[in-house]
Length: 438
Image (cartoon, rainbow, N blue to C red; front, side):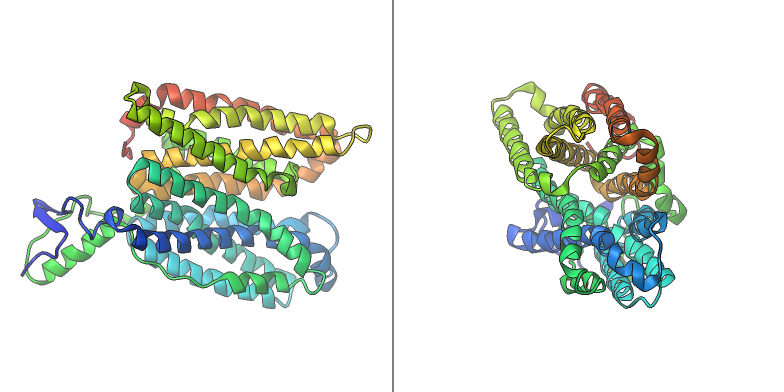
């Protein structure tokens, strides 16, 4: 009986240094295809979220619907599913592995999308939209965990997470474009196009699951092998995302800020800030390059994970508030349309910098539990996203464009201190966390 190459038994079963079995030590030629396939599923999931947006006017006559809140249900129920799925799939991926969770959920996601395309009536469509959201939520959180598994070095992980978050943001913007072209022909084609994009396979990347497989093989040969963190309480595992959201200040604060920024997407022009995603990516990479040069120069501030990830979100937070107030008070008939529309440029920059920097910081802080940490953010973000479409029309009817949009802008102002507070107190908070990894 022998231990497979790349493993060592020293009290507990572990990887050897630079083990070829450890996902973080795999070659780039092996990592990149997995990362790209995972990226594709994230974009596919995000695309599905907004697909019905421009199809509603065409499916309404077929299902005999009036123009009211019920027309928002295909999107709202999808986002409700986004709040339910992460509670189960993210902690499961940290227990049974990423591959099993992603393959099983993506399979049901594809079948549910097929159900939407063939739905004979309104209730059936809504049921399948909820299932699409529940199953489609898995890539939004588990893929962040895959990148944490594959890219241990902080700079590589940051760049991988930049791509992941850009795909996560870009998918919902592509949805209305696709449905806008397809729906006049037949609204069902919006879902058939989604099916064309589907179909992926995955390699396991979660290190504890790979160790567990080797331990199982050795035990079958009569060797007594133990693993660190082997005992699993399934109830506690499934409670992890909510526990982190409630008990971890880093998670709760970043999730709140991202959720509020996400809700602001409803007010801005998506075609205006799509192009600004590229500028945001270049800004993030430029700051990353500046950070690496300072690190090589031996500057002490580079030892802080907070100062590596959070400064650009400080700028983004201020930009978010300014962009919403700009939109609120320039949206008048007497003001040229280009002025309020231009606020989307600043909003796009602010939204992406907040999204990228805060979630990358969370992934750094909770690497092995990053899927659950990201799930906490997705849950709150999707909950607000589900409620906002139902509340936004009454709010605008009651308050008008200026005050309704200003209300959201003033709420975002309350979140501006969050990244500054994490820079000041993040280290102390992490040191007291039961889930900390850095």
